Length: 414
Image 1 (cartoon, rainbow, N blue to C red):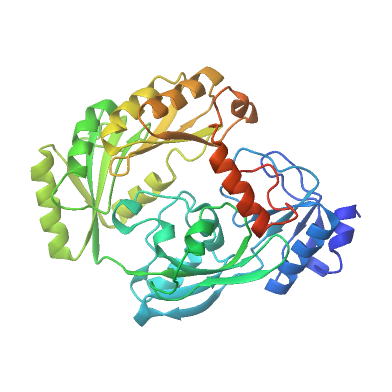
Image 2 (cartoon, one colour):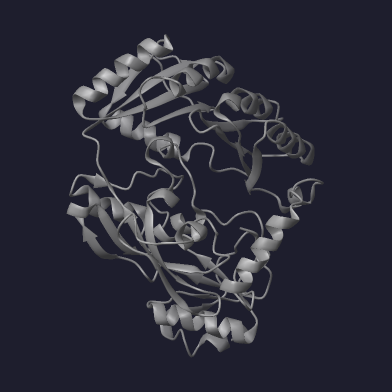
């Protein structure tokens, strides 16, 4: 038994502890521990702080990032903490353990015609704790808001094993600095999320997809911008390239603009008609099972590949971001959010020159560029990490407060 596993045997007995485990961003853990209680999880962090080895919190494992943790380390899985704690359909709130998947949350809320309107990649297997830790945005955020807007409270275990209960079950529950918003998106560098309280929404009675197709993505930029300035707010509007739908007549097209319209049946019909008139293009309407399958395919589009890059700027600059992505050599898949001004690109190969050019374009447009997945050597390309000493100083101070021994996700920045 390794030194790390032996040190944890007293706090994570039996099936909760095993040596080794799947690699995280290419690094192999010394042990994997799956606590079944908050007390066990806090005990693991206390031991790690005392013994000096790292801890990598993992939920569904859908978003590890490109940077491997420093060794030695243990993977701390939250999948042993799952299930709904409290659900109040009349109040549109739910508290659930961090290891509960979004698919499981949907099964419970769906029985009451409610939902958590987030559609990140790998949504059914992504955990609620992982959603809070990453704060990942998705196309539905344009109309419903981001996770940090609807996470009302959470329970966090700090790097030295303290249990903090933050927020509550209503929108106005704190005075002063909102620690919940600070922790959402901290990616496991400040603590381990063990439970989350979220605000829910009524499930729309009807959803339709308005689909416009073209042979080139650039031909759809103007209609996409028109949708984002329309007098009605769709649930989402995304432009996908390398995503092949079947147009009327059976011809496959290389790019699609898909507008999601949701609400009461009469409202959906009226909003769809107004969007059609405002854009002035030719949409076809998809609904029912076909629309649900289309939304699912779009959700996961451009989220897997040897390299996955996320770019962001003002919505008016989406066309410029797409032009930069189109210049990347080799096959790429792209999903652009016309309303948020973000572009996600997946490629099977990304050179240092192409990566540097993408960052440069995003910077010139006043935005940013993040490598979500890819070869580690890309991070060594000059200029890959912005030089901001003030942010680094603040981040270091926060980590010292929440993780005094520095055991959580060594090597990663939030």
